[in-house]
Length: 389
Ligand SMILES: NC(=O)c1ccc[n+]([C@@H]2O[C@H](COP(=O)([O-])OP(=O)(O)OC[C@H]3O[C@@H](n4cnc5c(N)ncnc54)[C@H](O)[C@@H]3O)[C@@H](O)[C@H]2O)c1
Image 1 (cartoon, rainbow, N blue to C red):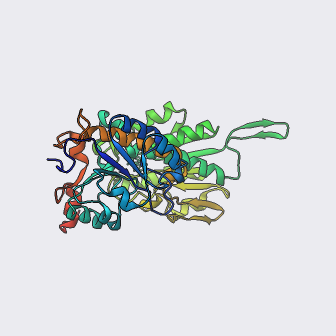
Image 2: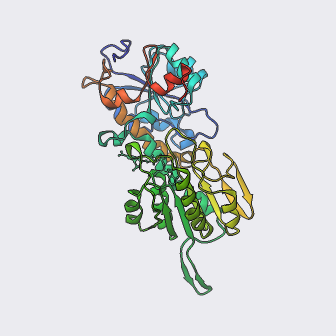
Image 3: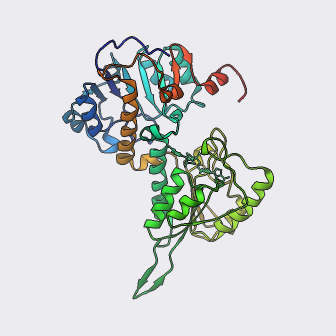
C-alpha cells in the first residue's frame, strides 16, 4: 500500500480534534506527548479547549509547543494527520481534507456510513481497534489501556453505590466483614477490576471461560471459580459456548452472584453480542443492596436487566449499565491513549520525520481501514457490499 503523496518530504502537521460525543471528556493527546512530537520536528495543532474536559487546559498545550486552533476549519486546514478518540461521524469526516490521515477508534464493523464517507473522500484511516495484540504493538494497544481505565472505574462506581464498606474493619463499634466482589470475565478490564477491588480490601472471586485466566486471577490474590469448560478461541479470545456449556455456566455463576455484594461483569466475545451471564431469576436471588456494574452494557449487557446508560433498581439490587467508563477518569485515560497514539505515529513517520510512503509494517497493514478510495478492512467491506457476516 502506498501512502498519500500530499505531505512531501517535510515534518507532519498533526491536528487534534475536540471530542464532540455526549459525555466524552477524553482527548487524543496530552501536553507531555505534544512536547515529544514537537521535539521530533512535527507541528501540533489542538482544537480550542480540546483538553479541558480531561483537565489539560490550552495553556499547557501552548507551553508544550502546540498551536491552538480557534475553529475546526482552522484546525484541519493543511493537516496531514488528524487524531481523535471517538469514531468519527459522517459530519466529522466531511470536514477532514481529502487525502489526510485519520487515526483513532473507528468502530470498524459498525460505523459504516462514516467508513463509506472516508472511502469517498480518499481519507487514509487507521482503526486502533484493529492493532494486532502482538508484543511489539503493546505500547499502541488502546483497547487495553482504555479497558484498564474501565475496569478501575467500574469498581469505584460499584463501591460508590454499595451500602457496605469494602474492607474488613475491626473497630470499637464492632467488627465489619469484608464485602464480596465478583468479577465475571477476567480479560484486561476484569483483571484491573480484581486488582482494584483487592486494594479496597474486598474478598474477590472471579470467573472466565478461558482457563488460562485462572492463573492471572490467582496471582492477583483472588479466588478463581472453575468449571469443566475451557472456551479459549482464536487469538486468545473466548469462543461462544454450546447450549450445554451455557447451562453449566449459568448454574455456577448464579450461585456466585447470589453471595456477592458487588458484581462487575466484563464478558465479551469479539464481534458478537455480549453473553448473558446474569438472568432475571439470578438477580432475584441477590441480596438487597447488592450492586451490578455491567461493563458490557453497550454491547447488549451481561445481565438480562441492564439498560445501557441507566441505573435501575430491581428487587433492591442496583443495576448500573454505564457508557464510556474510561471517560470517568479522563486525565489518565487520555494520558494512556496519547501514549498509545505516540507509539502508533512512530510507524507513520520515517527517520527524517516525514510521512512514510508505504504501509508495509504488519501493524499498519492490520489497522488500515480505508485508503486511496478503498475500504481495506474486509468485514466492513463485506457489510457495505451486502455480504452477511
Ligand atoms: N498484547 C497482548 O498480548 C494482549 C493485550 C491485551 C489482551 N490480550 C489477551 O486478549 C484476550 C482478551 O482480552 P480482552 O480484555 O480484550 O477480552 P474481551 O474484552 O474480548 O473479553 C473480556 C473477557 O470476557 C471473557 N468471556 C467471554 N465470554 C465469557 C463467558 N461466557 N463467561 C465468562 N467470561 C467470558 C473473555 O474470555 C475475556 O477474558 C485475553 O487473553 C488477554 O490476555 C493480549
